[in-house]
Amino acid sequence: MTMSYYTLGNSGLRVSRLALGTMTFGTEWGWGADRDTARAMFDAYVEAGGNFFDTADLYTGGTAETWLGEFVAERGLRDKAVIATKFTMNSNPGNPNAGGNGRKNIMRAVDASLKRLGTDYIDLYLMHIWDRLTPAEEVLRTLDDLVRAGKIRHIGLSDVPAWYAGRAQAIAELRGYEPISALQLEYSLAERAIEHEFVPFGTRHGAGIMVWSPLASGLLSGKYRPAQAGNAGRLDGFRNTTHPGFQKFSEHNWAVVAELEKVAAELGRGMAQVALNWVATQPGVATVILGATRLSQLQDNLAALDFSIPPALRQRLDKVSGTPAPFPHSYFGPEIQVRVAGGVVTGDKPSGYALPVVVEGEAVAISSN
Ligand SMILES: NC(=O)c1ccc[n+]([C@@H]2O[C@H](COP(=O)([O-])OP(=O)(O)OC[C@H]3O[C@@H](n4cnc5c(N)ncnc54)[C@H](OP(=O)(O)O)[C@@H]3O)[C@@H](O)[C@H]2O)c1
Image (cartoon, rainbow, N blue to C red):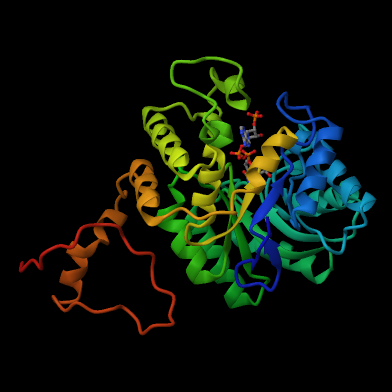
């Protein structure tokens, strides 16, 4: 395979279209990989041409950052590697300021990450999850200070409401702070909610989407089945929990899995490869973060961009995985637009401009009232 690269958002940072996730580096959470396996996956990824590594301060209690830093150093790759890590989660129960998005925690967290990673700078520093409290001004100003101090190079947001991301980017632009170059969000054939707000925001305002859980935690590899409560992988451990990241067994998702299986068979490819290819080639996606607990899984996934999905097969995947647009997006389709434009059918902009993502729908007759 040949790894290709995109620049992340509006930045000049070149990242491979497949990133390596490290949430599975370490067994502390009960479903990760041991050190030798993690190292073998790191090596395979580097040898495939990958340069983009995603981690977070408290993945596997800090083991993920520590191992990533060690692997990068052992191979002498610090200059080549693009390392993304995150803050927000609390590192010290009982101390509310050892978590969250306030300045005190960000300043503590960045130094702790630099220490575990064994480096003096982070390429992309992301807010992990919205804490519902800290004003965007405080977060942006603190991150801008860290860029100027040389501790971080670029900034991003993960798991935030779209209005917050829009406000944060506007603050950055108007105040001359470091802009948001990346949005890290869940996206897959089993979770397409980001298409309504985040994809148009990211493509218009310079934030590249970093996809997490592109296989819906393994569901889209096809190894889970509706009638089977077995021992296939990570999701089995969450069957009786309410953790929001791992509730994947639904009628809708089983229909997606069934159609994906047929499409993959027609393509002569594995289901995981087809699911990864689909999401990597969706509008706005800068990079897809691969997750794996075994070397064989990662090798399988690294071949996901070696083919293309023909339009007819893609349409079948789009159709089975799509859900009706929620309000107000249900109001932006052609039926309303012809009324906005007074019945005149126009291309919205001269060619060369980024156009809004097209709202799917049938052509409609011009209505007169
Ligand atoms: N910002 C955030 O909030 C956030 C949240 C989650 C993840 N992330 C990032 O995104 C990365 C990827 O997320 P993810 O691990 O959830 O991705 P994923 O691709 O949805 O799931 C990966 C899991 O699926 C299974 N799998 C992967 N490839 C397979 C294959 N070819 N065949 C069969 N099973 C396969 C493995 O689990 P089993 O072996 O257990 O089945 C693997 O650990 C993480 O490492 C992390 O860096 C970020």
